[in-house]
Picture (cartoon, helix red, strand yellow):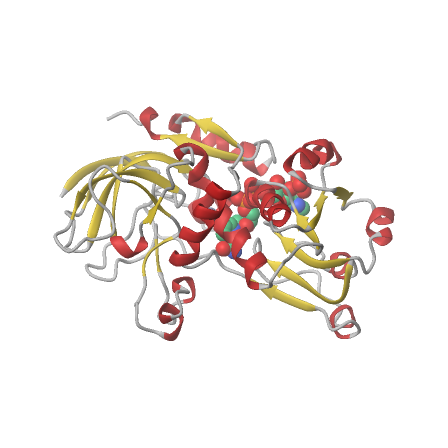
Length: 350
Ligand code: NDP
Ligand code: ZN
């Protein structure tokens, strides 16, 4: 066993605080990793505060992990000591169901083992995430960080990146398509970069008029302030795809109306009931599709990392001292981060 330290929440209302714990010794197919950087995802906040009703405590968040391999089990072939590697939102799955066989482990029919707050499939212990000094993960769920990428700015690709890349690819976004990105936070700003790299004409929908200039710098061709009914109406019937990263309940109807016929609205930010209700006419009358998407499989996570290296795409980050993690959560809720906090694990004191 390894002695490890990290930041965990002891209850849904407690701030994150340092915690000492043990990591297992590597199993034959495991890779032990010294965590160098870990991105801070809005899901970490939802889960630390039990906003999805599925949290178990103590809860140590973190699923945008980049680190160095320190030890490998005897059957490991994919990674070796010293390699720069990444771990995203999952650390295991059943590996034989239809979804796993299709490299879509995130939709494992038995449920994937999440990187934190999830029971380990072998020993039942609760997984602890990347806000920590080390992590031990089965090699199948460990990806390679391309040399061209900076390790700190690459960390958020493991969740924010793959979550926005995967639906754009799945629905075949291509050159000339009109794509709207809803919300410019960690996910949204990556969505803009990917849609642009795929050749789309990209529009940011934001509540924050002040983000307009910044959005253009990220690659957006247009900006619509979503609180301005006139601007929303003027966009009626214009879009092929909408990628919705808004993390709270919001009225989908005005957005659906901006889709052309056969247009697709992809939800990634919301896992709660949709309120207010959708007017079915907004779908039926124009054969529009409302869909959802969850992160991406391991193979596709490697693909997006390689895509970022090839297209010089990186995440805009603000480096964080782990002691300021609670303040960072407040700032994220206030929309005050450009556009992802990444914890520098060197700030974690033994
Ligand atoms: P951020 O907090 O970084 O960004 C969210 C953005 O949404 C904000 O920047 C803001 O953009 C907009 N927003 C925030 N609050 C509101 C509000 N009250 N009304 C309207 N818009 C709002 O979050 P992330 O990008 O990290 O995550 C976004 C969501 O995606 C979260 O719910 C997260 O849990 C979820 N998620 C889902 C995944 C999946 O696999 N499906 C994977 C990872 C995350 P602006 O100011 O431009 O309006
Ligand atoms: Zn995430």
